Image (cartoon, rainbow, N blue to C red):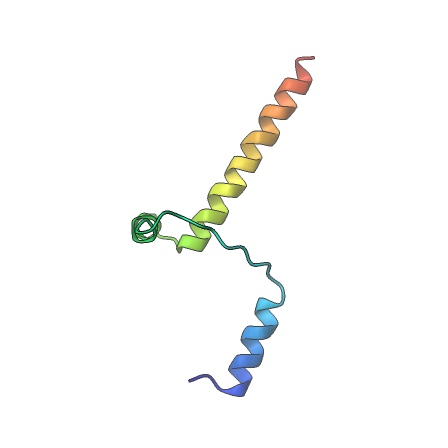
Length: 69
């Protein structure tokens, strides 16, 4: 059970974050969680890393396309 101080600390930390919900096919969560653990990351950290990497690749591809014009 959390103390009041712990609850306040968690609330203060979470106030700095946005939350999203991802819908996946039933039964797939464990597969994704296991993969993340094999990568030494939490499922959340892996999802964020993959999204950031994809965004960076998209930006790079866009810049390369603009430079070829």
